Figure 1 (spheres, one colour):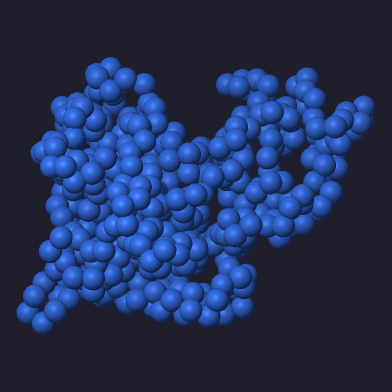
Figure 2 (cartoon, one colour):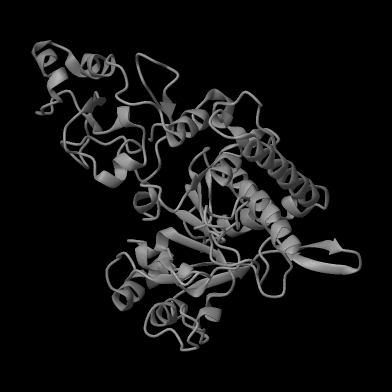
Amino acid sequence: MSESVVVHPMNPRYRIRPHPGSVLHRRECHAHPGGDCSHLALHHVDGTWSDEERAAHPEWTWNLVYLCRDAAHSCVPACSFVSILSSPVRLCLIFHLSRPVARESSVADKIAYLHASADWDEHWLREPCFQLSADSELLLALNSRQVSLIQSSLSKIGRAYDDMKSSGYLDKLASFFGDVFSSSSAPPRPTSTFGAGFSGYDRLDPDGYDRAGYTMAEGHSSTDWEARTHYQIAYFVELGRIFQIPASLNVAYDPCYSIVDVVVLAALGIRGLTRTDAARPFLRIFTTPTLFYAPGAEQHTVGDAILRTPDSTQLLLQVGDVTWCLEPHEAVDGSGESYEGYPHDLIAAYVLSYKKVAIPAHRIEMKPGEAREAPAGENHLLQWIPVSQREAFEKRRGPAREPDIRMMYLPGGGQMIDD
């Protein structure tokens, strides 16, 4: 059984929902992993969290682990003296946490506390809210232009969601996933979702360059591109509701995200990651069943997700048909040369092993008499590696690892990491 929330014992306002990949999410004794331990309780034990785990959670939770009453351990110095008591299990945690939180809460911390509030308990049972209170803590440090952009963006996403709902598409989608995951050959049911893309609402950086390195998709105007973004986010919101994913365990990343995008997503129960977010390494290593939604994904975006996942059966891809990734594409420097080796060979190995099912399409009329695809923008498929194919695929792929660094060429002639 996993803990749904962890609450600071001296300040109930600090309440978080641990990510499924966190040690906090697994109710397992740190001293006796895999054992049948009783009387488990949380303790602060130095050195038990990685830097990536710490980056993904508020500071007061760092190095918290479960220990059984009989475990021999050494808590942080501030707690150690209570070990002489006959029942130190609960007192150890309370004594340590009675001290003030060491630093002011970051925006990421505030989002974690927002998503862990009672307002987000079983949020999938209520209609989603596409607005943010004017006095929300998330808006306090933003300027009036940013606040206006956040509120207008949320409103547009809400209209896209209403369009999909009123057309009956969301019911059709829920029925589709219900059938897939009730079948005898079903993949593992996702416990988290990860979205790659969704464009961004505040895309120009301080130098005036597009944060993502492009201005629009081929064949689409900037207006079309923005409308696709509305639908993609609305669709991602619904995925979390269909699979009953707790708030903040829906994660999204795009290189162009700014604080505006992070707050827009936070208002919808989604944890948005920026390019410089220290939590990215932890949240992009998929160690639990994850639905990876990447509409219009580049070849390397799909390849990176497959490469990072330790157990390939845990990754469910909701992208265009991955066989598309076998086609030659221009190199990132615009030289016209094909990608070599990676991710072409990786995808080729994946295609030999994967299963796929088609997801119902939803089309909207974005201009009179002219229909555009939404929300994915291309063939819409669910793809995964069956358990029976895992060993063969991972033998071809090799161990999970971080991909090589790629560089993006900017309009002004400079470069930045394309990740």
